Amino acid sequence: MRLIEFSFILGLTAMEPNSKVRSVGMKNFRVAFFDIDGTLVDNQLPHTLPFGERIPASAKLALRKLKENQIEPVIASGRNHQTLAALAEELGVDSIISSNGNCVHYQGKIIHQNSIPNDLLKKLIAHLEQEEIAYLIETADLIYSYEDEQQNEKHPSKKALLQQSDPLPENVLQLIVGWNERTDFKLGIDSPLIAEKVAPVAANIHLKTGTKAEGIHKICAEMAITADQALAFGDEENDFTMFDAVGFPVAMGNAAPALKEKAAHVTAPVSDDGIWKACVELGLIAE
Image (cartoon, rainbow, N blue to C red):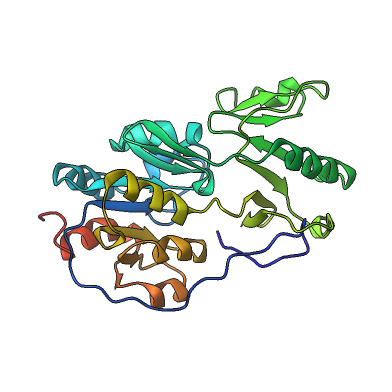
């Protein structure tokens, strides 16, 4: 996944990564943040496999050992909390940054939620419908759609069906929109929203103030620690803000070149036990 600049969408602006490369010494680390796709999850394996089956056993063991060593493992993703909850439970992870930082759970409790104001949400949806652009509405617990019920039943635990007459859900964190050449339009406003292209045919639209970095700040504040006591593991350019928010950023061996340049440490690819090797090399866990 990557952030792209397309200010023509709804007056949206893209986040500019800081090109400064930090070099920090070893600290008393208290928390480690992990991107999912390409970092914990091996994207070279068939996507038909469940998340858990695409995470190397060594990475699962590393997360458990981090926890044993009083280092809080946190997963950070653009997906909503409900989608990540089962994976987190499998990994023994209690803290989750979801919906691109717009929802934050620390040790099982929600500590932050950044919802789109209802009037702005209505304006956004009206424009999407006018342009005939497909969209899904995402909260922490559900993804809502206007699909017919038979199609919606393919993912009953993740989606809820909306009728046109239904009120909009409360606490909407982001919209998942179809992406193509027809998405090039303007609302003509100075929008507080940002768009993040997450696939060739899809983008997330959410508040600018919602980022993985903001989620990191919230968890560090909750733990009463500084950024220097935090690590982050990532692989794509949309992890730039996460790297900016911690004292020690770690890039996977399969990471984008620009992210590797920004990292304080580059480990092996996820498929070559990169998470485990980094944790051992940095002295976070014993081999």
